[in-house]
Image (cartoon, rainbow, N blue to C red; front, side, top):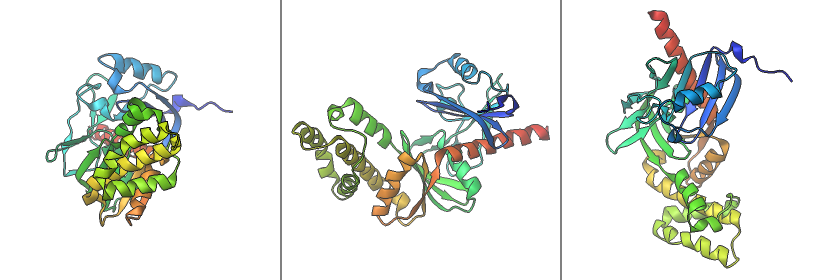
Length: 298
């Protein structure tokens, strides 16, 4: 086995959000090495950010860092201004004063109020490969964002707390005794349909997952699939203007994108799936090239 020559990396890509930090040592567009930790921005303050970067990049080249995510929020490493939609998808990296760190600015929306920090970079990465895309992007995660794309601009977007709601209900509510990893396709399909057609009844059935498990009539994988399908069904109801009659591309980790693709297929929507990590690196790569071009023009 050979050890990656990280001393030859010419820049470092970082996706730094509330719960995690992912880093890649890059040589051009090639990944030389990668690392990840649970050092999310929520648990850091002040000099913590610099200390984490130093520790996590130990042994790598002393190279500029190009980052996206909540690291650019008010309580992150530095507050980076966001652009208002409609806005171009071209990355807008801003250097952190006194550091060889650039952070890509996010996007805001005034009406209804919304904010994205990180997903704008994945959108830029996807559109680098599909510049003519005109439709809707769905980006599942702890929060799921739906973004309407036209003429290489983000026209509007909407954020849903579906991932966080699943984690909270399955880990911190009474349902934690019932819910396991989703693994029952039929239960998922039925829950999506029920949540879309009868949201009031679906809401009333959440506690039934606990009751059925206590009475011995429900398996954890079925309870998990039912909860997941219910939450995604409610989300699809709220996001209907984004996907109805639109071309949809779902971007993220396969475990995140697959349930959305299946739920959308139930509604007659044909969608494609894109790799979230590849989109992130492509977007950060566009930002790095913009930084290099700006430096060359001086």
